[in-house]
Length: 199
Ligand code: ATP
Image 1: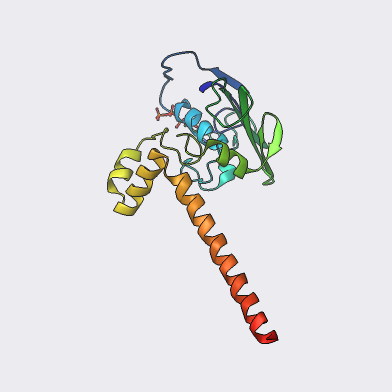
Image 2: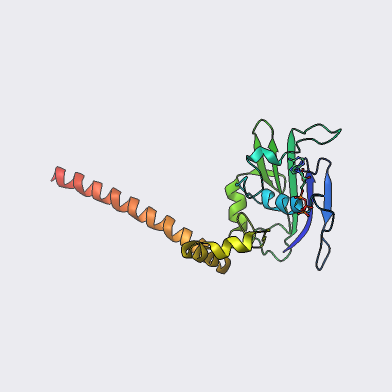
């Protein structure tokens, strides 16, 4: 799987539609302070489902929409699309190209889509779970992240290591299965009570 391109429109400092194509090898983004380098990384985080405004250096989620500049009015919509080459089917999908899109409007409406088909955030999370990408992924280390990880408590650090090792998916499935077993046991107990009453 390879990140092919990102298209950003109305997101933070990117008022106009901007497309960045990632070539093979290493890509560096350079520019003066405040020119929007970190905003590109935040656009990647956002389109992959980031839910924390704080992580995106905002107070609320709508802060990602272009808020205007000298001679340019604020916009009503932010939209980011990211394209992956999935010809190796690293992402669990039959598609060889996968485009993820996220949109948000000033009235609070928002949507996600995979290959232009509207979907739930859960579908995006499932697609990227344990791939090293996706919400809260460790493949993006922002300024200050390293200090944060070092200062975290042992439990938080353990969950970071479990996510990196791919154990998290199984832990989550185990918890869900245990919950189902407990529910089923509850139902069995209730049936057994009813049978006893009838006897
Ligand atoms: P540095 O090198 O200092 O880290 P940078 O190139 O990473 O800077 P960013 O932090 O990505 O720059 O961009 C900051 C710019 O984005 C600021 O000029 C800020 O005003 C602008 N910006 C952030 N959010 C919005 C928004 N919602 N609407 C318009 N501009 C925004």
